[in-house]
Image (tube, rainbow, N blue to C red; front, side):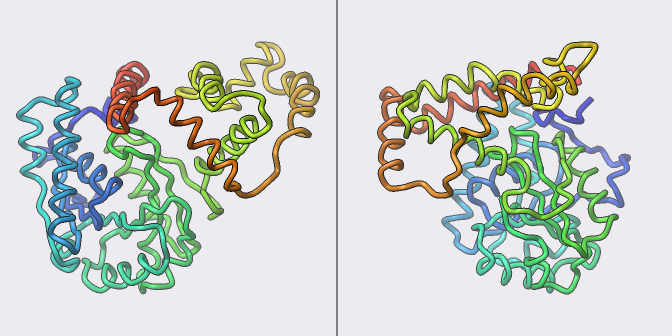
Length: 334
């Protein structure tokens, strides 16, 4: 099955039910997130029009897509022919109206700012087809606020990918109060066709689901360094070599359900460790709400030591190499 496995390329041959013929995608913004979206849609067989106002930004985005596809080819995920077909599906545009004029689904992937997004959404609302779905890749903004800029509020929602979008399966679907159920269901279906794992955020809260969990964990990770409990590197090791391995395929509720044993499950876990050991931990957790300059300096120093001379590019490649291997193991049999 291609569902829940983003790396398997799909080529539509004309006879498939593509949710009311949703085949043409427009991506507004060609930075890291935008180029990842373009990569994913193109390798899955969709026609993609990528917009950026500046020619050099469009060229840089297209180069990033080529780099992404070359990497996937080097890992045996796609063939050279599949890369060629993917690139043939991509066009670029220097005007929003040109990029979205035939779009069935529009992905806005610009800076996370209402001041930037609202004017873009006004243009999207003005120039896109009436039935097009309008989405933002925001990582924490309120869809209700973005909807204030447009008339077709029922067609607008957040579809927040995790970076890199062409590798990480998670996408958070955040409807506004006026987003229609039809828009939500079509977006979820499209994301599943891409091989993503969509979750629906039923109440728009800052950071949605994933970033709230990540922020809570990172605060405690910083706190452990600040209090001298461990180095930056050892805090990172304690996460990726322990709970992080389980988190790659199972969330905390199921993990603790298994921890409670077959007869009692999560209820037994709560009655035991949950209200004893965990209670004492929660009472001792950090509660501050900003990173001081001294903490920032300590983290920069600690990360530099953890890099052990590796370049940024080499570290990113190490991440992506292992992501591919992990995704193949976890999802190839789904």
